[in-house]
Length: 261
Image 1 (cartoon, rainbow, N blue to C red):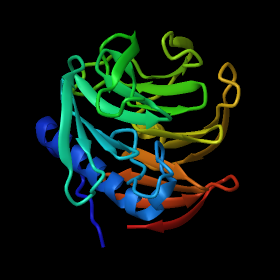
Image 2: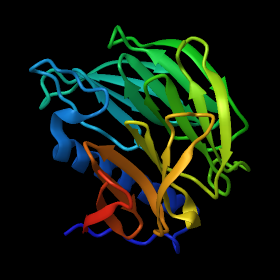
Image 3: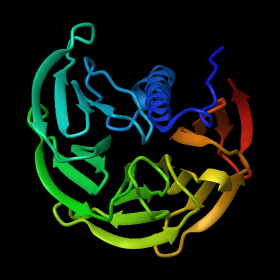
């Protein structure tokens, strides 16, 4: 059994560290759980793939592992999974927090916006564009022509906004903010087939139909506080929180809880 320690009573620095550990463990378990079904996976026989949550500081695409720290993107060649080889690194900006891969693009979330990199050349990703905002934490996920970003207040990022931003990336070199929606205090999020899952603080876990970005529709809400991040895949939603891991079936709404750890 895996037990997640409650974070409410920790000091902010320790809280941040614990959350990062949860995110790493969360992504690792999901990579093992769903195998080759992950975002940014490569169909070649020697590739390693998996799906991480929106709060992750690493992502796998094909035979490359991409990791970020506060200012740098580091690339590893994982053609031989048991022997990852540092390949290259480059400065990205300041306050870098998360990374998400989709097709041959990397979407990097920072405290001042999102950065889009083309990784057609896996060892040397090239910056394509950025979309800046007021300082705030902002994990990002992508599906189709849209990127979904949450901004929240009361965090180490000193943000004052609590909202969901929907961004058109139809032209990656020119991302455009389509619309913002007010939220309670959102953190991690995930998207699958037009369904967006958001951990929204005391408002719980929200499920939204985002097929029309200008008119999103609520589909479900689970009254679970301390939800931190989510990973939707093939009709199964895994939710990480300060009290453990939960799994839901979202083939129909309201969602059915399948398990908890």
